[in-house]
Picture 1 (cartoon, helix red, strand yellow):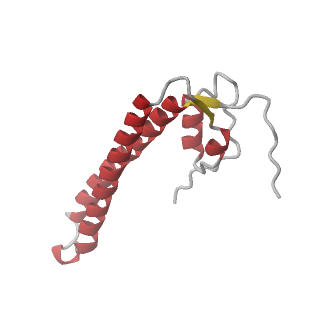
Picture 2 (tube, rainbow, N blue to C red):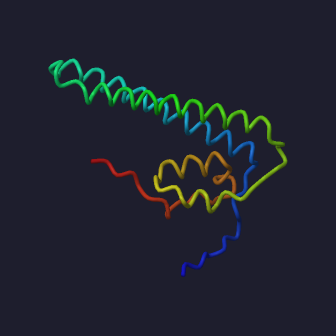
Picture 3 (tube, rainbow, N blue to C red):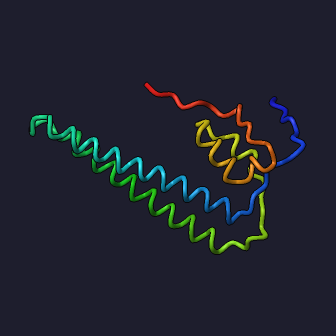
Length: 130
């Protein structure tokens, strides 16, 4: 059984701001999809035409992912605009579920973690590159 250690200062943020930060992160992921799509397209030129099938399928998958992220971002932005600004929620536990350290740091900062001096996301995992 995992016992949570209570923090002296809990990080809460307006729901509107939380949706806005989430939308921004989805837009960043979408931009990375566009970059990946261009890399796959460039690689296809070096591959014989008969062997391009998986790359074409990969490009379609990345394009679909990019469209999905764009749509989810638009949804989150609309939700951000429709939620009263005085409605807040604790974001501590949700942030601690993020396994990419840089993502957790960006979101914690954007949601006010630095102002409350609680942007120590040591429990978040690091990005593993191979």
